[in-house]
Image (tube, rainbow, N blue to C red; front, top):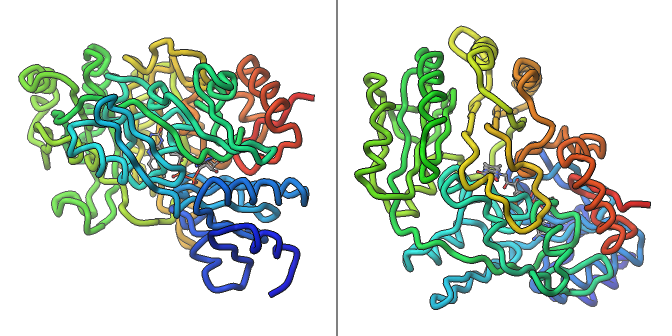
Length: 457
Ligand SMILES: Cc1cc2nc3c(=O)[nH]c(=O)nc-3n(C[C@H](O)[C@H](O)[C@H](O)COP(=O)(O)OP(=O)(O)OC[C@H]3O[C@@H](n4cnc5c(N)ncnc54)[C@H](O)[C@@H]3O)c2cc1C
Protein backbone atom coordinates (compact mmCIF):
# COMPACT_ATOMS: atom_id res chain seq x y z
CA UNK A 1 0.00 0.00 0.00
CA UNK A 2 1.30 3.46 -0.92
CA UNK A 3 -0.11 6.54 0.74
CA UNK A 4 0.96 9.58 2.73
CA UNK A 5 1.90 7.33 5.63
CA UNK A 6 4.81 5.73 3.75
CA UNK A 7 7.25 8.04 5.54
CA UNK A 8 6.08 6.55 8.84
CA UNK A 9 6.42 2.98 7.54
CA UNK A 10 10.00 3.79 6.51
CA UNK A 11 10.98 5.46 9.78
CA UNK A 12 9.23 3.39 12.44
CA UNK A 13 10.56 0.05 13.71
CA UNK A 14 7.21 -0.92 15.22
CA UNK A 15 3.85 -1.40 13.54
CA UNK A 16 1.99 1.11 11.34
CA UNK A 17 -1.65 0.41 10.49
CA UNK A 18 -4.33 2.30 8.56
CA UNK A 19 -8.08 1.56 8.61
CA UNK A 20 -9.00 -1.69 6.91
CA UNK A 21 -5.61 -3.33 7.49
CA UNK A 22 -5.37 -6.51 9.51
CA UNK A 23 -4.17 -5.50 12.96
CA UNK A 24 -5.67 -1.98 12.89
CA UNK A 25 -8.67 -2.82 15.08
CA UNK A 26 -6.58 -4.59 17.73
CA UNK A 27 -4.05 -1.76 17.76
CA UNK A 28 -6.84 0.79 18.33
CA UNK A 29 -8.61 -1.25 21.04
CA UNK A 30 -9.40 0.27 24.43
CA UNK A 31 -10.36 -1.09 27.85
CA UNK A 32 -13.71 0.69 27.66
CA UNK A 33 -15.51 -0.93 24.74
CA UNK A 34 -17.69 2.18 24.39
CA UNK A 35 -14.78 4.46 23.45
CA UNK A 36 -13.48 3.16 20.11
CA UNK A 37 -10.52 4.89 18.51
CA UNK A 38 -10.71 5.56 14.75
CA UNK A 39 -7.51 7.35 13.70
CA UNK A 40 -6.38 7.57 10.06
CA UNK A 41 -3.12 5.94 11.17
CA UNK A 42 -1.83 4.18 14.29
CA UNK A 43 1.80 3.67 15.25
CA UNK A 44 2.60 0.79 17.60
CA UNK A 45 5.81 2.21 19.04
CA UNK A 46 8.64 -0.07 20.11
CA UNK A 47 10.80 2.66 21.65
CA UNK A 48 11.60 6.35 21.95
CA UNK A 49 12.77 6.66 18.32
CA UNK A 50 9.37 5.44 17.05
CA UNK A 51 7.58 7.94 19.28
CA UNK A 52 9.83 10.76 18.06
CA UNK A 53 9.18 9.79 14.43
CA UNK A 54 5.41 9.64 14.94
CA UNK A 55 5.32 13.03 16.69
CA UNK A 56 7.46 14.65 13.96
CA UNK A 57 5.26 13.16 11.25
CA UNK A 58 2.11 14.43 12.96
CA UNK A 59 3.59 17.90 13.37
CA UNK A 60 4.77 18.10 9.74
CA UNK A 61 1.33 17.00 8.54
CA UNK A 62 -0.59 19.27 10.95
CA UNK A 63 -2.28 16.29 12.60
CA UNK A 64 -2.82 16.03 16.35
CA UNK A 65 -1.20 13.24 18.35
CA UNK A 66 -3.32 10.84 20.42
CA UNK A 67 -1.78 8.45 22.94
CA UNK A 68 -3.16 5.13 24.08
CA UNK A 69 -1.48 3.46 27.04
CA UNK A 70 -3.75 0.83 28.60
CA UNK A 71 -6.86 2.49 27.13
CA UNK A 72 -8.97 3.17 30.24
CA UNK A 73 -9.87 6.77 29.50
CA UNK A 74 -10.19 8.00 25.92
CA UNK A 75 -12.53 11.00 25.78
CA UNK A 76 -12.21 11.42 21.97
CA UNK A 77 -12.14 9.07 18.97
CA UNK A 78 -8.85 10.46 17.59
CA UNK A 79 -10.51 10.53 14.15
CA UNK A 80 -8.01 13.05 12.70
CA UNK A 81 -4.95 12.08 14.77
CA UNK A 82 -1.79 10.04 14.59
CA UNK A 83 -2.47 7.53 17.36
CA UNK A 84 0.58 6.25 19.22
CA UNK A 85 0.11 3.02 21.16
CA UNK A 86 2.56 1.88 23.81
CA UNK A 87 1.77 -1.84 24.27
CA UNK A 88 5.25 -2.82 23.06
CA UNK A 89 6.95 -0.64 25.70
CA UNK A 90 6.18 -2.34 29.01
CA UNK A 91 9.55 -2.97 30.70
CA UNK A 92 9.76 -2.50 34.47
CA UNK A 93 13.24 -2.33 36.01
CA UNK A 94 13.79 -2.10 39.74
CA UNK A 95 16.84 -0.69 41.46
CA UNK A 96 16.49 -2.51 44.76
CA UNK A 97 19.15 -0.46 46.54
CA UNK A 98 17.43 2.86 45.94
CA UNK A 99 13.90 1.30 45.82
CA UNK A 100 13.16 3.09 42.55
CA UNK A 101 11.35 1.58 39.56
CA UNK A 102 11.86 2.64 35.96
CA UNK A 103 8.56 1.99 34.22
CA UNK A 104 8.18 2.16 30.43
CA UNK A 105 5.34 4.16 28.83
CA UNK A 106 2.92 1.30 28.21
CA UNK A 107 3.33 -0.81 31.39
CA UNK A 108 0.18 -1.61 33.35
CA UNK A 109 0.15 -1.47 37.14
CA UNK A 110 -0.10 -5.27 37.03
CA UNK A 111 3.34 -5.39 35.35
CA UNK A 112 4.70 -3.15 38.10
CA UNK A 113 3.14 -5.12 40.98
CA UNK A 114 4.53 -8.36 39.50
CA UNK A 115 8.02 -6.84 39.62
CA UNK A 116 7.87 -5.02 42.97
CA UNK A 117 5.79 -7.30 45.23
CA UNK A 118 8.38 -10.13 45.44
CA UNK A 119 10.84 -7.52 46.75
CA UNK A 120 8.44 -6.30 49.46
CA UNK A 121 7.97 -3.00 47.64
CA UNK A 122 4.84 -1.23 46.43
CA UNK A 123 3.50 1.84 44.62
CA UNK A 124 0.22 3.66 45.35
CA UNK A 125 -1.76 1.80 42.68
CA UNK A 126 -5.42 2.39 41.88
CA UNK A 127 -8.38 0.04 42.12
CA UNK A 128 -7.47 -1.78 38.88
CA UNK A 129 -4.08 -3.20 37.93
CA UNK A 130 -5.13 -3.20 34.26
CA UNK A 131 -4.71 0.63 34.30
CA UNK A 132 -1.62 2.12 32.66
CA UNK A 133 0.95 3.15 35.29
CA UNK A 134 1.92 6.33 33.45
CA UNK A 135 -1.63 7.24 32.35
CA UNK A 136 -2.59 6.98 36.05
CA UNK A 137 0.30 9.08 37.34
CA UNK A 138 -0.30 11.78 34.70
CA UNK A 139 -3.71 12.24 36.37
CA UNK A 140 -2.24 12.35 39.89
CA UNK A 141 -3.02 8.75 40.77
CA UNK A 142 -5.36 8.48 43.74
CA UNK A 143 -4.98 5.08 45.38
CA UNK A 144 -8.02 3.63 47.19
CA UNK A 145 -5.55 1.29 48.93
CA UNK A 146 -2.63 3.49 50.00
CA UNK A 147 -3.83 7.02 49.16
CA UNK A 148 -4.57 8.46 52.60
CA UNK A 149 -1.44 6.85 54.04
CA UNK A 150 1.01 7.91 51.34
CA UNK A 151 -0.60 10.56 49.10
CA UNK A 152 -0.91 10.78 45.34
CA UNK A 153 1.21 8.42 43.23
CA UNK A 154 2.62 11.37 41.29
CA UNK A 155 4.24 12.63 44.54
CA UNK A 156 6.66 9.68 44.20
CA UNK A 157 7.74 10.25 40.59
CA UNK A 158 11.34 11.39 40.45
CA UNK A 159 11.72 11.68 36.68
CA UNK A 160 9.83 11.50 33.39
CA UNK A 161 11.29 10.79 29.98
CA UNK A 162 9.00 12.58 27.55
CA UNK A 163 8.85 13.27 23.82
CA UNK A 164 7.54 16.80 23.47
CA UNK A 165 5.72 18.38 20.52
CA UNK A 166 8.98 19.21 18.71
CA UNK A 167 9.66 15.48 18.48
CA UNK A 168 12.56 15.66 20.94
CA UNK A 169 13.02 13.35 23.92
CA UNK A 170 13.53 15.33 27.13
CA UNK A 171 14.24 14.47 30.72
CA UNK A 172 12.02 16.20 33.26
CA UNK A 173 12.86 16.13 36.95
CA UNK A 174 13.23 18.60 39.83
CA UNK A 175 16.39 20.04 38.26
CA UNK A 176 16.08 19.56 34.51
CA UNK A 177 12.96 21.01 32.85
CA UNK A 178 11.46 21.43 36.32
CA UNK A 179 8.43 23.31 34.98
CA UNK A 180 7.62 20.43 32.63
CA UNK A 181 8.09 17.96 35.49
CA UNK A 182 5.50 19.83 37.57
CA UNK A 183 3.09 20.15 34.65
CA UNK A 184 3.18 16.44 33.85
CA UNK A 185 2.03 15.53 37.38
CA UNK A 186 -1.72 15.97 36.92
CA UNK A 187 -2.28 17.43 33.45
CA UNK A 188 -3.31 14.13 31.82
CA UNK A 189 -1.13 13.89 28.73
CA UNK A 190 -1.20 17.53 27.62
CA UNK A 191 2.58 17.93 27.44
CA UNK A 192 3.94 15.03 25.40
CA UNK A 193 4.31 11.29 25.15
CA UNK A 194 5.87 9.93 28.33
CA UNK A 195 8.07 7.05 27.28
CA UNK A 196 9.20 6.16 30.83
CA UNK A 197 9.15 7.35 34.43
CA UNK A 198 11.13 6.70 37.57
CA UNK A 199 9.07 6.33 40.74
CA UNK A 200 10.16 5.80 44.33
CA UNK A 201 8.69 2.63 45.85
CA UNK A 202 7.22 2.13 49.32
CA UNK A 203 8.27 -0.54 51.81
CA UNK A 204 4.83 -2.19 51.93
CA UNK A 205 4.93 -5.98 52.02
CA UNK A 206 1.54 -6.74 53.58
CA UNK A 207 -1.55 -4.77 54.47
CA UNK A 208 -4.76 -5.35 56.36
CA UNK A 209 -7.14 -4.90 53.45
CA UNK A 210 -10.38 -6.11 51.93
CA UNK A 211 -14.11 -5.52 51.83
CA UNK A 212 -17.08 -5.90 54.16
CA UNK A 213 -20.29 -6.54 52.24
CA UNK A 214 -23.81 -5.92 53.56
CA UNK A 215 -27.14 -6.30 51.77
CA UNK A 216 -27.99 -3.34 49.54
CA UNK A 217 -31.09 -2.60 51.61
CA UNK A 218 -28.78 -1.70 54.53
CA UNK A 219 -27.27 1.15 52.50
CA UNK A 220 -28.85 4.08 54.43
CA UNK A 221 -27.59 3.01 57.87
CA UNK A 222 -24.29 1.54 56.70
CA UNK A 223 -23.37 4.64 54.71
CA UNK A 224 -24.19 6.97 57.62
CA UNK A 225 -22.17 4.83 60.03
CA UNK A 226 -19.28 4.69 57.53
CA UNK A 227 -19.31 8.49 57.11
CA UNK A 228 -19.11 9.10 60.89
CA UNK A 229 -16.44 6.42 61.40
CA UNK A 230 -14.29 7.33 58.39
CA UNK A 231 -14.08 10.96 59.48
CA UNK A 232 -12.13 9.96 62.62
CA UNK A 233 -9.72 7.43 61.09
CA UNK A 234 -5.96 7.94 61.22
CA UNK A 235 -4.14 8.58 57.94
CA UNK A 236 -2.95 4.97 57.83
CA UNK A 237 -6.51 3.99 56.85
CA UNK A 238 -7.90 4.37 53.34
CA UNK A 239 -11.57 3.56 52.87
CA UNK A 240 -14.62 3.88 50.66
CA UNK A 241 -18.29 2.92 50.72
CA UNK A 242 -20.18 1.70 47.65
CA UNK A 243 -23.66 0.79 46.52
CA UNK A 244 -23.11 -2.10 44.15
CA UNK A 245 -25.35 -3.94 41.76
CA UNK A 246 -22.90 -6.71 41.15
CA UNK A 247 -22.64 -8.27 37.70
CA UNK A 248 -22.55 -12.09 37.69
CA UNK A 249 -18.91 -12.11 36.59
CA UNK A 250 -16.72 -15.18 37.19
CA UNK A 251 -13.87 -13.29 38.90
CA UNK A 252 -16.20 -12.32 41.77
CA UNK A 253 -16.95 -14.28 44.95
CA UNK A 254 -20.04 -16.46 44.39
CA UNK A 255 -21.94 -14.84 47.27
CA UNK A 256 -21.79 -11.41 45.60
CA UNK A 257 -22.61 -12.37 42.01
CA UNK A 258 -25.83 -10.75 40.80
CA UNK A 259 -26.50 -9.22 44.25
CA UNK A 260 -27.47 -5.74 45.45
CA UNK A 261 -24.81 -4.87 48.00
CA UNK A 262 -23.42 -2.13 50.24
CA UNK A 263 -19.64 -2.48 50.44
CA UNK A 264 -17.07 -0.94 52.75
CA UNK A 265 -13.51 -1.16 51.47
CA UNK A 266 -10.70 -0.72 53.98
CA UNK A 267 -6.91 -0.83 53.76
CA UNK A 268 -4.59 -0.08 56.66
CA UNK A 269 -0.89 0.65 56.28
CA UNK A 270 0.07 -0.02 59.91
CA UNK A 271 0.24 -2.68 62.63
CA UNK A 272 -2.28 -5.52 62.26
CA UNK A 273 -3.69 -5.16 65.78
CA UNK A 274 -4.29 -1.46 65.25
CA UNK A 275 -6.02 -2.15 61.93
CA UNK A 276 -8.36 -4.72 63.45
CA UNK A 277 -9.21 -2.35 66.29
CA UNK A 278 -9.88 0.52 63.90
CA UNK A 279 -12.13 -1.63 61.72
CA UNK A 280 -14.15 -3.14 64.62
CA UNK A 281 -16.98 -0.52 64.54
CA UNK A 282 -17.80 -1.49 60.95
CA UNK A 283 -17.86 -5.19 61.81
CA UNK A 284 -20.21 -4.33 64.69
CA UNK A 285 -22.80 -3.02 62.23
CA UNK A 286 -24.29 -6.49 61.96
CA UNK A 287 -24.03 -9.72 60.03
CA UNK A 288 -22.25 -9.28 56.72
CA UNK A 289 -22.65 -11.26 53.49
CA UNK A 290 -18.87 -11.40 53.17
CA UNK A 291 -15.89 -10.13 55.14
CA UNK A 292 -12.51 -10.30 53.37
CA UNK A 293 -10.65 -7.79 55.57
CA UNK A 294 -7.48 -9.49 56.81
CA UNK A 295 -3.72 -9.24 56.55
CA UNK A 296 -2.80 -9.97 52.94
CA UNK A 297 0.25 -9.60 50.70
CA UNK A 298 0.23 -6.23 48.91
CA UNK A 299 -0.41 -7.93 45.54
CA UNK A 300 -3.63 -9.43 46.94
CA UNK A 301 -4.75 -6.03 48.23
CA UNK A 302 -4.57 -4.68 44.67
CA UNK A 303 -7.48 -6.94 43.68
CA UNK A 304 -9.78 -5.99 46.58
CA UNK A 305 -12.06 -3.78 44.43
CA UNK A 306 -12.86 -6.65 42.06
CA UNK A 307 -12.59 -4.35 39.02
CA UNK A 308 -13.13 -6.23 35.74
CA UNK A 309 -9.95 -7.99 34.57
CA UNK A 310 -10.83 -7.68 30.87
CA UNK A 311 -12.33 -4.89 28.70
CA UNK A 312 -16.00 -4.01 29.29
CA UNK A 313 -18.42 -1.38 27.93
CA UNK A 314 -19.04 1.26 30.58
CA UNK A 315 -20.25 4.80 31.20
CA UNK A 316 -18.95 6.72 34.17
CA UNK A 317 -19.09 9.97 36.08
CA UNK A 318 -16.68 11.42 38.63
CA UNK A 319 -16.75 14.37 40.99
CA UNK A 320 -15.52 15.56 44.36
CA UNK A 321 -17.70 16.56 47.30
CA UNK A 322 -16.92 19.13 49.97
CA UNK A 323 -19.06 17.28 52.51
CA UNK A 324 -21.18 14.16 52.85
CA UNK A 325 -23.96 15.37 55.12
CA UNK A 326 -27.13 13.48 56.07
CA UNK A 327 -28.87 15.44 53.30
CA UNK A 328 -26.23 14.33 50.78
CA UNK A 329 -26.63 10.71 51.88
CA UNK A 330 -30.42 10.99 51.56
CA UNK A 331 -30.01 12.46 48.08
CA UNK A 332 -27.70 9.60 47.11
CA UNK A 333 -30.06 6.96 48.52
CA UNK A 334 -33.02 8.47 46.70
CA UNK A 335 -31.40 8.08 43.27
CA UNK A 336 -29.27 4.98 43.84
CA UNK A 337 -30.40 3.24 47.04
CA UNK A 338 -32.99 0.58 47.78
CA UNK A 339 -36.16 1.10 45.74
CA UNK A 340 -34.48 3.38 43.20
CA UNK A 341 -34.10 0.61 40.61
CA UNK A 342 -30.96 2.40 39.43
CA UNK A 343 -29.06 0.58 36.64
CA UNK A 344 -25.68 1.77 37.97
CA UNK A 345 -23.27 -1.01 38.87
CA UNK A 346 -21.11 0.95 41.29
CA UNK A 347 -21.52 4.25 43.08
CA UNK A 348 -18.51 4.62 45.32
CA UNK A 349 -17.68 7.37 47.79
CA UNK A 350 -13.99 7.53 48.65
CA UNK A 351 -12.84 9.37 51.77
CA UNK A 352 -9.95 11.61 50.71
CA UNK A 353 -7.77 13.66 53.06
CA UNK A 354 -4.83 12.29 55.02
CA UNK A 355 -1.62 12.35 52.98
CA UNK A 356 -3.66 13.17 49.85
CA UNK A 357 -3.85 16.71 51.25
CA UNK A 358 -0.16 16.95 52.00
CA UNK A 359 1.37 20.00 50.35
CA UNK A 360 3.68 18.47 47.76
CA UNK A 361 6.25 20.04 45.49
CA UNK A 362 4.29 22.13 42.97
CA UNK A 363 2.36 20.00 40.51
CA UNK A 364 -0.73 20.12 38.30
CA UNK A 365 -3.22 18.37 40.60
CA UNK A 366 -6.29 20.43 41.54
CA UNK A 367 -7.81 17.64 43.67
CA UNK A 368 -6.10 18.31 46.99
CA UNK A 369 -8.34 19.50 49.81
CA UNK A 370 -11.53 17.86 48.54
CA UNK A 371 -13.14 15.72 51.25
CA UNK A 372 -14.74 12.95 49.17
CA UNK A 373 -14.54 11.59 45.65
CA UNK A 374 -17.49 10.00 43.88
CA UNK A 375 -16.91 7.32 41.26
CA UNK A 376 -20.06 6.18 39.45
CA UNK A 377 -20.06 3.47 36.79
CA UNK A 378 -22.72 1.68 34.80
CA UNK A 379 -22.38 -1.03 32.24
CA UNK A 380 -23.40 0.59 28.97
CA UNK A 381 -24.53 -1.63 26.15
CA UNK A 382 -26.74 -0.71 23.20
CA UNK A 383 -29.74 -1.78 25.31
CA UNK A 384 -29.05 -0.10 28.60
CA UNK A 385 -26.85 2.92 27.79
CA UNK A 386 -29.75 5.45 27.72
CA UNK A 387 -30.96 4.32 31.16
CA UNK A 388 -27.40 4.40 32.54
CA UNK A 389 -26.83 7.91 31.22
CA UNK A 390 -30.11 9.08 32.75
CA UNK A 391 -29.09 7.54 36.09
CA UNK A 392 -25.64 9.18 35.96
CA UNK A 393 -27.28 12.55 35.23
CA UNK A 394 -29.71 12.04 38.13
CA UNK A 395 -26.85 11.19 40.48
CA UNK A 396 -24.85 14.22 39.40
CA UNK A 397 -27.91 16.44 39.88
CA UNK A 398 -28.69 14.95 43.31
CA UNK A 399 -25.16 15.59 44.63
CA UNK A 400 -24.79 19.01 43.00
CA UNK A 401 -25.19 21.03 46.25
CA UNK A 402 -22.07 19.40 47.70
CA UNK A 403 -20.06 19.21 44.48
CA UNK A 404 -16.70 20.95 44.31
CA UNK A 405 -15.34 22.59 41.17
CA UNK A 406 -11.98 20.87 41.75
CA UNK A 407 -11.56 17.11 41.61
CA UNK A 408 -8.66 14.66 41.27
CA UNK A 409 -7.76 14.75 37.54
CA UNK A 410 -8.21 11.02 36.98
CA UNK A 411 -11.83 11.28 38.12
CA UNK A 412 -12.70 13.44 35.11
CA UNK A 413 -14.80 11.53 32.61
CA UNK A 414 -15.44 12.05 28.87
CA UNK A 415 -18.38 14.47 29.19
CA UNK A 416 -15.92 16.78 31.03
CA UNK A 417 -13.46 17.00 28.13
CA UNK A 418 -14.56 20.46 26.94
CA UNK A 419 -12.18 23.36 27.68
CA UNK A 420 -14.64 25.20 29.98
CA UNK A 421 -15.10 22.12 32.13
CA UNK A 422 -11.35 21.41 32.25
CA UNK A 423 -10.80 25.03 33.36
CA UNK A 424 -13.47 24.67 36.05
CA UNK A 425 -11.83 21.52 37.43
CA UNK A 426 -8.26 22.91 37.42
CA UNK A 427 -9.36 26.35 38.58
CA UNK A 428 -8.40 29.54 36.71
CA UNK A 429 -5.02 29.99 38.39
CA UNK A 430 -3.64 26.48 37.78
CA UNK A 431 -5.29 26.29 34.34
CA UNK A 432 -3.68 29.58 33.24
CA UNK A 433 -0.28 28.48 34.58
CA UNK A 434 -0.55 25.23 32.63
CA UNK A 435 -1.76 27.07 29.50
CA UNK A 436 1.35 29.28 29.67
CA UNK A 437 3.57 26.20 29.93
CA UNK A 438 1.62 24.58 27.12
CA UNK A 439 2.49 27.59 24.93
CA UNK A 440 6.16 26.92 25.74
CA UNK A 441 6.18 23.15 25.15
CA UNK A 442 3.30 22.59 22.71
CA UNK A 443 2.46 25.93 21.03
CA UNK A 444 0.44 24.29 18.22
CA UNK A 445 -1.56 22.14 20.63
CA UNK A 446 -0.42 18.91 19.00
CA UNK A 447 -1.46 17.05 22.16
CA UNK A 448 -5.14 17.98 22.17
CA UNK A 449 -6.83 14.56 21.98
CA UNK A 450 -7.28 14.55 25.74
CA UNK A 451 -8.73 16.75 28.51
CA UNK A 452 -7.25 19.65 26.65
CA UNK A 453 -5.52 22.68 28.09
CA UNK A 454 -4.96 24.86 25.00
CA UNK A 455 -1.79 27.00 24.87
CA UNK A 456 -2.13 30.55 26.19
CA UNK A 457 -2.26 33.08 23.34
C1 LIG B 1 -11.52 0.36 36.00
C2 LIG B 1 -10.80 1.65 36.29
C3 LIG B 1 -10.28 1.88 37.56
C4 LIG B 1 -9.60 3.07 37.84
N1 LIG B 1 -9.14 3.29 39.11
C5 LIG B 1 -8.50 4.44 39.40
C6 LIG B 1 -8.06 4.73 40.72
O1 LIG B 1 -8.28 3.96 41.64
N2 LIG B 1 -7.40 5.90 40.94
C7 LIG B 1 -7.13 6.79 39.92
O2 LIG B 1 -6.48 7.81 40.17
N3 LIG B 1 -7.56 6.55 38.68
C8 LIG B 1 -8.25 5.42 38.39
N4 LIG B 1 -8.72 5.20 37.13
C9 LIG B 1 -8.50 6.23 36.10
C10 LIG B 1 -7.21 5.97 35.34
O3 LIG B 1 -6.11 6.16 36.20
C11 LIG B 1 -7.09 6.97 34.18
O4 LIG B 1 -8.18 6.74 33.33
C12 LIG B 1 -5.78 6.82 33.41
O5 LIG B 1 -5.62 7.93 32.56
C13 LIG B 1 -5.77 5.56 32.58
O6 LIG B 1 -4.56 5.40 31.91
P1 LIG B 1 -4.51 4.27 30.77
O7 LIG B 1 -3.14 4.25 30.19
O8 LIG B 1 -5.05 3.02 31.32
O9 LIG B 1 -5.58 4.82 29.72
P2 LIG B 1 -5.43 5.50 28.30
O10 LIG B 1 -6.83 5.64 27.82
O11 LIG B 1 -4.49 4.76 27.44
O12 LIG B 1 -4.81 6.90 28.62
C14 LIG B 1 -5.60 7.95 29.11
C15 LIG B 1 -4.99 9.26 28.68
O13 LIG B 1 -3.79 9.42 29.41
C16 LIG B 1 -2.78 9.94 28.54
N5 LIG B 1 -1.68 8.97 28.51
C17 LIG B 1 -1.67 7.68 28.87
N6 LIG B 1 -0.41 7.19 28.79
C18 LIG B 1 0.36 8.19 28.36
C19 LIG B 1 1.75 8.32 28.09
N7 LIG B 1 2.60 7.32 28.28
N8 LIG B 1 2.20 9.52 27.65
C20 LIG B 1 1.37 10.58 27.48
N9 LIG B 1 0.05 10.51 27.72
C21 LIG B 1 -0.44 9.34 28.16
C22 LIG B 1 -3.40 10.19 27.21
O14 LIG B 1 -3.84 11.51 27.16
C23 LIG B 1 -4.59 9.30 27.21
O15 LIG B 1 -5.62 9.83 26.43
C24 LIG B 1 -9.43 4.04 36.83
C25 LIG B 1 -9.98 3.83 35.56
C26 LIG B 1 -10.68 2.66 35.29
C27 LIG B 1 -11.30 2.48 33.95
